[in-house]
Image (cartoon, rainbow, N blue to C red; front, side, top):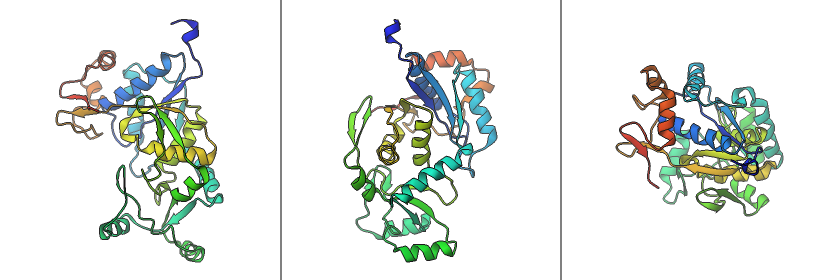
Length: 296
């Protein structure tokens, strides 16, 4: 590589949630993000996305560190989301001040009943969208419920948000320039009843804080990028280039999960598999028996 090929400003990241043991697919994704930065003389960062206090466990965080080191992956910086809750609250307050966030008092059961009762429930990338039940509540009704301490989350009024931003696009390495589809996720949650910041809000705030220039991540969150682009525009945050890669699947074509028996990195490590050899195989497109990359 010549000196002219080196672009030190490139920053990529791997951002796992410690809700279970990482599997081979996570290792593949981490290697792609790591190698993307290293090949360009850039920086590779690690972020632990542990805002889901009901599911995240310290032992899974420790496993992440051990698994990455075992694969030969080093990182140049570490961020822990649970240490940044005030930053996410500040971002939410900015959206409230713009009149773009509203409290939602619906439970999951409430939403499911309303969607089931509707013959024309709108659908997004991940299924039926939130029907907007609480979006139309008046100020007095919202205030009264809040005063009573009614459990609630905070949602983004996507329609109002898009009116403010106008048409938006984002770029994916494979898909090219993509026009933002406001119906991809609808009025997404910004802060849950039992979660201090949603994945969507935290990821855009943290990518900006870490100076991420290139987000290398799985195709399963491709649709989420529509919402991320809207939040970036509203909060005045920089927009990374996106690289959504294929996912690792089992013999039945099902995506691997953290509960996939025998395929967690920790299990392989504990069984005596050599991490450097596995990393070399994954880089060469050779996967353990029974798993492969999903087809586009």
